[in-house]
Amino acid sequence: MDNGYLVIVDANNHRVKLFDPDLRCCSFVNLQYRPYCVGALGNELYVTLPQESAVQKLSVTYPFIFVKRKLRRKSYFKTESECLGIVSYKKDLIVSIRFSTQTATEVTEHAWQIQIMSTKGKIKRRFFNNADGSPLFHEAKYINVTPDYKEIVFSETEDNRVKCLNIKSGQITFDYAMEDPRGVTCDKNNNIYVLGKHGSIRWILADRKYVKVLLDGIKKIRFSNTLTYNKQTHSLAVPRNENKIDLYKVKNSIHDY
Image (cartoon, rainbow, N blue to C red):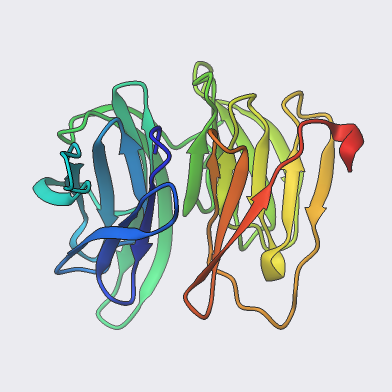
């Protein structure tokens, strides 16, 4: 969050947890359904619940003397289908939606949309097809938006691609091959960081001309599927197994690597 607090989705325990800047858990809420992703907009949090096709709104209270910030459950709204990735966009939200074609026994096909919607669920814009009618997305579980609000960044794990979608034109402007990409995050300078296989991290520079390897994967460690950037400390937080989070300090220059 902008105030340096860290919010974690604990999917297995159906919880959302709030950590202070010193990484001490100060609050959590239990949810009926398994949460998938969380986006912050000021002191409000928006959590996707794929099983329910809904977004749950939470608030973070202001601290008082001897009283820490707390998470509070607020309203929620339904989405058109299964919602997964979510990120704030100006005063709105960007959400990835997966539509499924099902028979009596199995799911036969998925179609993806990325939607810009209000914080009450009103859809303002949809992205789904290229100009020739072909689908823009084969998968969009992990999404983010650059701080200048010009690009939506997403990864396609099954196709081993990381892409950028220009919000104004609705066209793909960057397409990079990477093995098993998952979570994506952006820093204040529009650089992109991508979590890859075994916890490896790639740095896509703001000009999109260079991609650097920041961290090689560690095969013996099972990492989560996402990562996040803390603009106050210029660091990356990467959850992994054993209930741990790895923090990596990001250096300021390409020449430091």
